[in-house]
Image 1: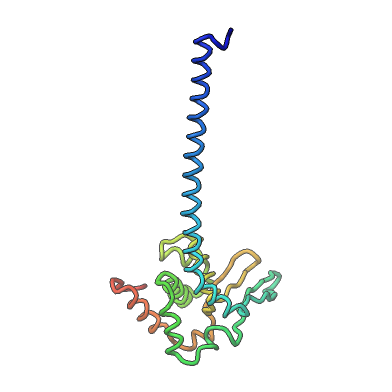
Image 2: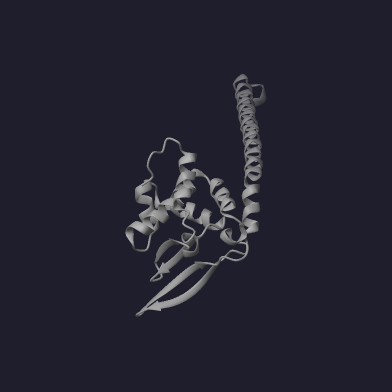
Amino acid sequence: MEQNDPLFQENVRNSFKKVKEHINELENEIKELKELISIKNKEIITLNEERRPFLRDNEEISENKPVLEESSIGNKGVYSFIHSFTKQSLVKQLTSIDDLMTKFQQLPRQELLVFLTLQHLENELKHPITYFDISKPLKLSEGCIRTYISNLIKKGFPILKNRINNRIIALSVDKNFKNLNLKQKLEDIYYGLDQNQTKLF
């Protein structure tokens, strides 16, 4: 009979052996995937813990949302996203210049540098400042600048975004903040964060 054929029996043994090897490989892959999922879960938990302080900051300024206003210059419509500074906004909610400086001191170095660059370019260029204008001296991509600006606005810092001709976004620092004349103090804060920096602009 075929079952008693040594060659047949050998083929059956080899087939079972291959199946077992395949099963072992699958079990090893499943084990590796479980370990990877466990690592990713731990990373997610860590990220959530790190994000909690920022989420609390965002909740505190949740009322500070952009207001869409429409105006026109000649025949061209200008849509302005003007940051509405409510009683919870940065400048109004802080009771002293010292508190305001503390808020800036808590900023990451790169976000503070982006804010200072925007303020500097406004004074120097005398025209609407774009993400590209800020990206050039800092040698960063426009995407990076867009992210930093978005973070600053979400935290309540006095940056205005105006959409010109419904396509170009122009950035500026709120005039009320400029009137506080804190430019030099902000630069001193930055120098304190980066002692290797000898000259900003």
